Image 1 (cartoon, one colour):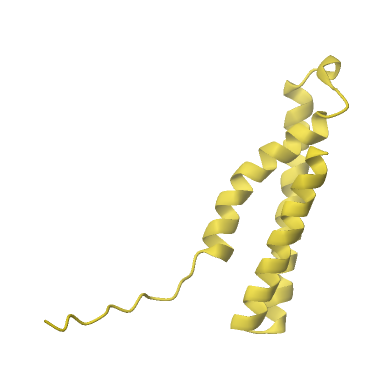
Image 2 (cartoon, helix red, strand yellow; image 1 turned 90 degrees about the vertical axis):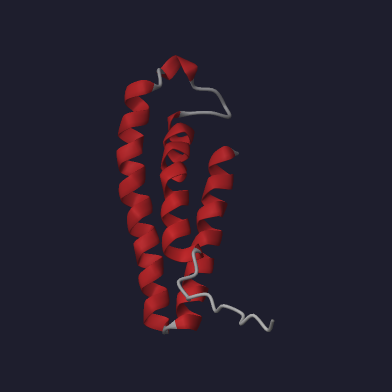
Length: 101
């Protein structure tokens, strides 16, 4: 169940990044954002999966929490920071309102 929530989170971020880059730049940039997210997800899950199997004993696995759940949680934490800085943070300079007094 936890894995499903994490996968849905990634789908929502991918849709947001695709739409934002497509609207701001071009369709090509939208697909590049999707590719970047997929690449980071695949490589990150491979790295955290190996780490999860090293630190989580097999006897601790339950129906709700397994090695895959742990690895996805360990992946999602740094990805949140990455997604914020690359996709959610607006790079437009803020315009100052002139003081009328």
